[in-house]
Image (cartoon, rainbow, N blue to C red; front, side, top):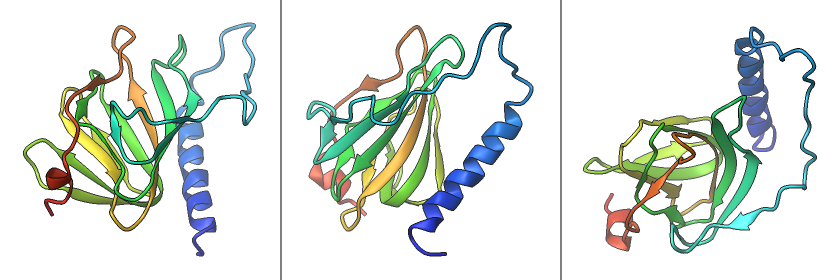
Length: 164
């Protein structure tokens, strides 16, 4: 499988599982599918208050009355990373492409690759980003508690990032 078709295969597998687990959740009477057209949500740069390096955030969907979790596609260029942070309801990261790094406070840095899924439990201090040699893109699915989905903390220092 070449590098182009591999992410497409992962996406197809993810959507097949997602569809099969959601068949029991029929729409309410009078509801219908909603489509958010591609390109209608603005991609933004990751705030320098919460990220180091070049980061792009593409909103995919907001939390709403149907699903109390937001989704965003986040691309980290080499060396880019988030600050330390926690999530009150946890977060799942599905690595779509590239090679990244993630670390829980007090534990070793771990490498993550396309196809990997990372579970960040509620309240666990962690960071994630690209490796030094490759960009990394992940789909972040983040739960909300009382409208809040993240608590940002201090930035990851270069020494912490390079401690491998």
